[in-house]
Length: 520
Ligand code: SGN
Ligand code: CA
Image (tube, rainbow, N blue to C red; front, side, top):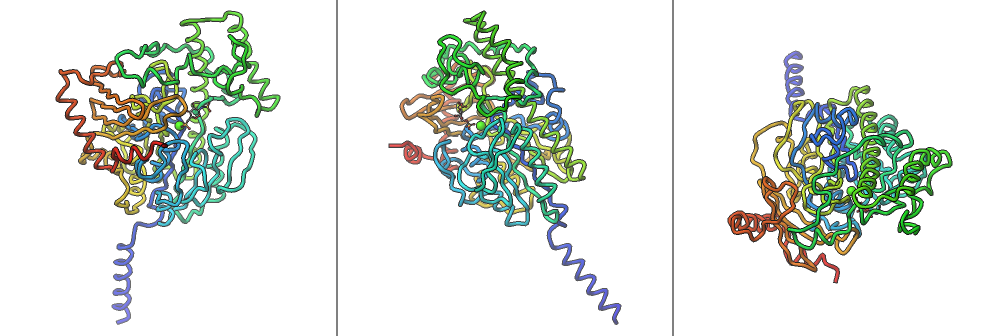
């Protein structure tokens, strides 16, 4: 009899334990790596070949061992709004953070809050750029605003400012490891937002990489000397040209403007450096700056100098980011945690590296609309997967909840890409919706919204203009000539207008809401 009772009890226990969720160690950890302004053109894995693959082995490793998303886009190509979309899974016009200026409402629903409520331990380390006190995290150590490259301050748990010595791209990965090592409650899965500052302007390299790439020559992109014909006024009126809009101190690292002798609008960024750091810096930048002052290049030679100073410094800080990722991956591997961690690598938006003569982002043109997306999770994602479906930063919040086994709230507007990353053939969107607002503002990029399909793009610039542009990405991948109004494309144009109407309706955007976001 006792045996029968025991067996019955055992049977019930087995039944109950099968019905509860998977054992805790089976829920994956989430390591979400977000860089600032890193663009696909600077990633060897995307095949652009700016540099040999050996330069960024850790980013390449993620692509080789996981999935590379060929068509990964943002909904509003600027920092703080992009991060608000990431956290909320909602468009800017819904989460309220339309530009870098206004506040972010941390009281609203976000995926870290949902993870935390469902047994995850969460941490936010690095740049978030949303002001206020982060919510949804057991621990946060964030850069104030844009933060600094050298000897930066960080804010602990949204209140206490602490100054650190060193370069921020060496500090941030170390903070991630320190949190895992000492603070993380190992009975729970973790979810970390590991957000770098680099390669955001003004690209101040770590001391050990100051001279890296100084001897590497890069070709100009084919449209570097764009004359902005064939499009509306927006491309012509921007203020983001390498040659005309970079600051001699801040960006080009000169003491003052070599032509006028004036101090640049933003000073050379040396105030935060120690004497030794300054000496190492001068040993590298001093000689070419001297040569420049003697030669005083102009025309194409001037453009070549500025383009190289920009690109080399940009890639030097990407190198530090790659090192940091390598350190964190090595730590996870050593601890036996890596294969049970969904590692996502992305950036808050793309960036121009001389295409159209530009730096910065904001436009719905390809280089800033796109952003890298690499994902490693060998339990589900085959090594070397290439995803063609169009995904958005809007999709990350639902995807992470999906991986974590947490219900995705109905009001999140994105779609989980978990199945497409695993190579499954699931129904997917055939167009994406975009809306940029920060105008008037830095770099003078007019307000616009639009739609992109796999082949075509329709953009409406509004506010102080009312102009439409349309591109055929197959015949004009560099977006040099708008075909809006071209009778040969009238059917395509009608199709894109209809998609735009449908998507605006689907996501709850409207002319009325658009007007409300224009300051009176
Ligand atoms: C700063 C930069 C701009 C950049 C914005 C937004 N100027 O204002 O070039 O577009 O940040 O960048 S700087 O002279 O201060 O470097 S974002 O990534 O935060 O959106
Ligand atoms: Ca950014």
